[in-house]
Length: 331
Image (cartoon, rainbow, N blue to C red):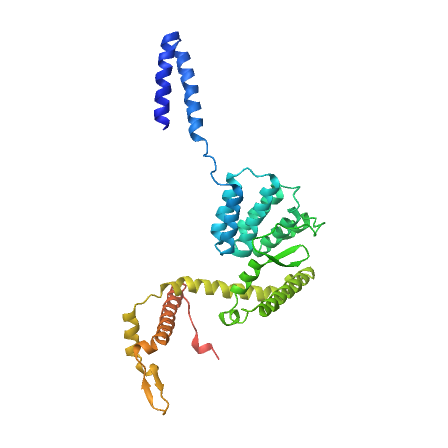
């Protein structure tokens, strides 16, 4: 497209230059201007062919379907490609920060968007809320000194400032903080499976919501009392973090490496037939077929395979670190 337009303009220009007999230097200067104009016309971003409110609504739909990273991408496109006033820019930036913080738990990315709200839109009502979230991000990133400084810099003079409505119906409020149906579904989803089955009806969901609110209130009170600095809390948090890190490592090193086919399960079944016998009504032992025992065979195979990989991993690490055990000195 660009080449064709440029060639046409060049041909017309040559005819015009010959007609008026302008100098070669002047011709080059004019040609350069034409080139810049052509380049500018080609580099203009195409006009948006979809209204901005539909893009934001689509981002809300993705959020409600728990497609959080995709929702962030759409919110960012809405923020980048559409002419928004400063209030809307601040609202969208705060929404993206909340998704990173509450759902993706990417505290560095959340921190960047909260800082964007505070620094770029200082007159927006969300600045105080963004300041609180900045402190929470820094605490989770274990940047205590920075968190303390951010806390001292924040005024927090007006805690009644309303936050923008997040996707989902508002079902409760803690002061000015809104709790939506999406928040409730997210929290229930992270319950153990047996507990998820117990919160299906409305009364149980309301009970869970009350418990959730009670926990938030107690947590806020504990923070105001400075209990996050309590030695027992600090030690317990460290131990919990260490356990979670080990669990995550094992998931990456072990769980992801367990792969099998039905033929592997059948071999395992035949090698462990005594595990898959069942007493009948008369008390006699009956050997279960592979199809009958397949579910249990799968669980046993995966468990044994994971243990095997775990043992190999630990042995390799012990050799690499030159670990020595003095068994005779252990009483």
